[in-house]
Length: 246
Image (cartoon, rainbow, N blue to C red; front, side, top):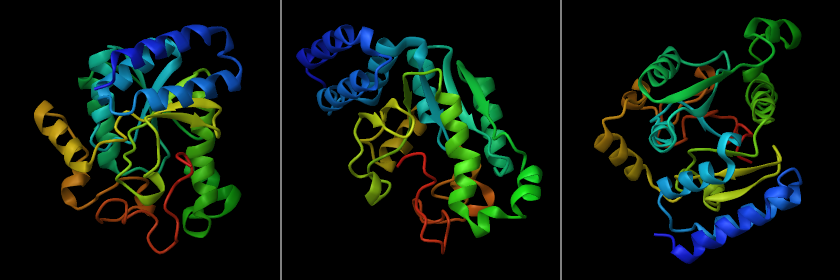
């Protein structure tokens, strides 16, 4: 549990930085101190801190896998805004999960789509850009659309885990997202997959059906195959991240 003195300190920090929220140095300062002070807190405590500090200018993002973060957000702040990147390449099961989440959880789902359809991208860059230049495809269909969607906010939350990959092992519960110029909150960072699975079971949550079919991580259909953890993503390319979390 987070010490009461740490939470009080964070409240004072946020209050003193209220007038600096439009300045990145103020937000970076808050992220640095919050990340240290909240270490050891439960995911719910971290999320509640974010909602209390940023209010309507905090949004959560989800990949529509286990849907733990949308559930927690809806429990803590009914009507919480949740972003889903609809890339145009998703599995039917992922889109079905998004529909189910929207209809069953007390959240406001925001579906974010790239400016170009898949057909328009094919016409401009050639068919199956994902196979020839996956970094560019991810940039156009995920990274840049998310950046535009996050523009009205001061902070956003993701469901990444430190245990997922070596690259994610050092992520903070709260950190500075220099790509988007926002505070990034990772409430589940300290959890393992077993913790996620237990939360899903204890709360009777729906999950993407592909998880029970051998998919350890679910992204765009052309770039995702069955595999443990994230081993099924961008197989054979050397790519391990889409660019959102680096």
